[in-house]
Length: 410
Ligand code: PLP
Image (cartoon, rainbow, N blue to C red):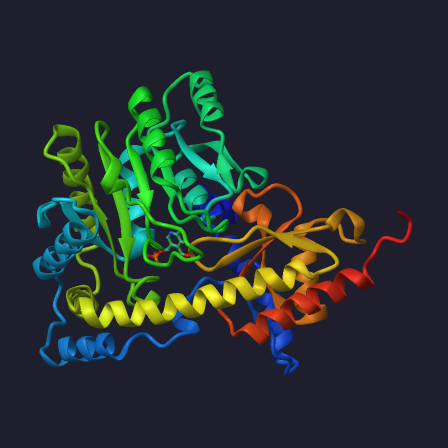
């Protein structure tokens, strides 16, 4: 029997580039070597999740909040999220316009499940967060890309986006943006965000804004939520506890889908149905996040301190790269990634995949290949969460790898 017949084709799409060198890394670690891991965007692996959140989680457990919650999330958390959006972005979205999910990851899956049929398209801006693509493809969808270009500060030429959309036989089912963006660290300004809303309206495309890094903004940038500029088309904002609240492992995210129009109500109803098949998000974690969102002062202190450290580390990494013999990078304004261009064409290396994999075995540094983010050729993504000296050491080792592998023939 052909073993492949027993499994779904979907599994071939469900792959995340960040995990692809796990086996190589484990092999290196088994020799006793310490690998600098700059591949996974997990703040909780570098900063302690704030104590008041841990206490709230423990309290929820002691109070036996260990039951299935409503599939849409506990009312207390949905109320806290509603208040957050009113307080921060002036949005009036009631608890019934909010659905709690197991991370933004699950919210994305629900969105693809309800929007995408075989052959449908969705508009993504590349470089982008890798799981957007397999998640879409699992439901039979295909991406239509708009491009962020480094020479334009990792921003898009929106007239080109319009022309791309005019070429499409059918309008993409949604347009998805990440703001701030992973992996470029771009923070969209109010004007360009409004223009994107204009395009979505012109083509009648619902908008999805992944704002998981909305409080991790620095270097003078100002964040604008889609909530502050959206009008017309239905939209959803995705966010959660993973990054701002430094609690990736809690697995709490949510979708805010405001609007009393029929379409928005139908999105909420269908996502609610999907959510009911997985019964409930993690209940004690929901209570902990309710406390975290509600405790504005404690959160402000915690996130303020974390963002200050992140900004210093990201900037130190970019500074080290600016002194490098083989790399260059634009300075991010949000999130905690540095997308660096490596002069791979001058090296005895086939492509980014080989570059990244050999960097682990030969220099004990782990980064992610930019091609996994749909970046142009020659990019790698460095997670700039480690301490300054570790990041500087990583850059030094990447440089020495490049020195050793220079193609002498050129
Ligand atoms: N969206 C973006 C842009 C991300 O970078 C990440 C994680 O790196 C996620 C979503 C995942 O979020 P969650 O932990 O809430 O599933």
